[in-house]
Image 1 (cartoon, rainbow, N blue to C red):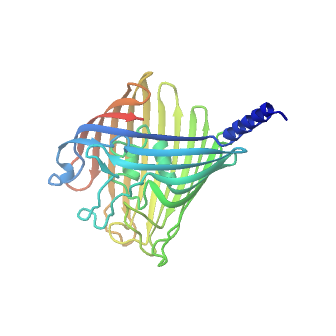
Image 2: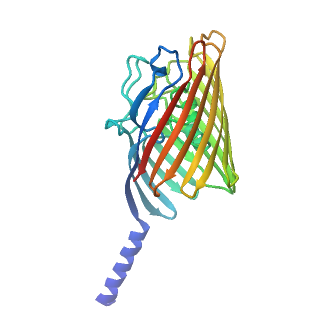
Image 3: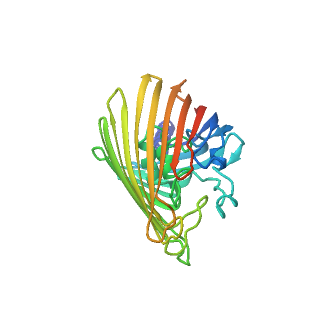
Length: 363
């Protein structure tokens, strides 16, 4: 073989190897900031019911900074990683919250990589992810309501994982392993396991599963989880405590509007006092295009808490209605305005109305 042919062969093999092992790395995230007049339901003397003007972060999307990478291992197999940190752009603080020792004792601060810290393998057979990752139930809640994962403004999120929720876990699971199937004629499914990692067995393993079907304008999904352990920023569970959470969701895109519906139930066991309750809730919503770059969002959510034997919480209904307008200035930047009415049906409680104007940028 001539030197020239040998050199060409080496170059060809090098190019093939590079193609086999292509890698990519990205820095990305979302910054969400808003100004608003905030008021929640509560007793007239309570801080929640006092009107407060705020420059606030994370009302529509919880801001975060992310790093991800993927490597093509050849033969259809890929390996990757994800690291994502929550942040509060109104103050520059990390995480979603500080440690809380007064309002809710012993609530720890958020972990730095609280949104995601995992590695995965992916092929035509599906995806296997290990580490800190999104919770399957939260993914369902966010996918089937017009406000998505808006902790500040979505009735569905606020009543399941947000300000008025009874969730004992979190929107993300640590020490987790998840398998997600490929799309099979519109069907997808996932199974997740969270290790309790507690030799005392106070906290034990948790499990979750989810399934979705999408066909044209129609989609339907369901999810179930049994939570027996919790990590920051949630309070640890003790021996015998468990919560089951089931959710069914659907959506239909009519063209002139996309309609959403959800129904969920929480069931607690091993708890006492105010936490010895069962909760039922539902959400109805619509996303209505106004122009190619804007839409109106409407959502109503209602939860009903009722005590089980030995519980101390009275039967309570909580209603949240949000109406918003979202205008895309580009593919990465939008502005929004939302009015949210919050009402808890308890003796002497008064409703609260919040008005929020925000700017969100993805990079």
